[in-house]
Length: 336
Ligand code: SF4
Image (tube, rainbow, N blue to C red; front, side, top):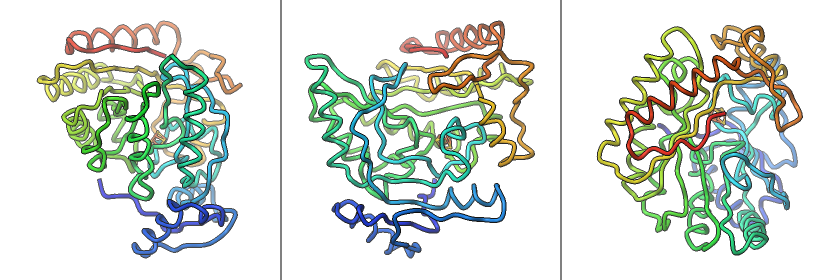
């Protein structure tokens, strides 16, 4: 996929205290991007939709002052962020709830501080291994050409005896990671879905075919790999389409003998997310009918609508059987 370049970049003066910030500004200037020095981002378009569109083309180069990392169950011990939001426009994105009406993209340049905080969290758990997720609120692969900080993280974890990194992406720009001596300390996962879900709801992301090609490249470079199938949706023909997905994937990875992890996540939404989604995508085909769902209390203090117990069971059984039938080396880590 073509590399993402924003229309406008706001630069927090604090970002210029870091070599990474200076280099990123230089790089963006060389690509003729409009640079504004400012402590804050100003987006005030005429409508909700225009604010969203403009936000997704706006970057704020700034710093991450987080000292205490949040936990990241069930996929890792902790999560940290090299950026927040992303160039993708997935209609269902769960960040609709947390990043509000103007989800402009923040890119954090103080990588030395971020790595120091990670090391402190590793030290707290010695001699155990501590795992970190870096894609909870962003897609770090989509933005790494601007700073190279994901590459730097992979190198950091490569040299760490007790820290392990996990990331997930919907983008195929993986070439810069292929020659890193990663020592298998970073697990690369690709977020996949049926053609229907990708084509209707995952705008501005790499195609299914290109994600699978990127996953093969990463696997051939020796990284542990995995797939997150999410959000799994029920719609007419869903079984056939997910069957195609898993069968095509098993053909692509027929010669790959190492473990492949699978994480399965059913579609869910909160009332706040529903309101934002309908404002942003008035013609969305997403099924947001609460009557067909049941409520579940979420970790962020909000109720979410998940599929009913019977539907959840059906998704779980159907997807698990498909994966186990097509992959001898699959480990299904969880269904949620
Ligand atoms: S790529 Fe991921 S983070 Fe970006 S909009 Fe899509 S779901 Fe959200």
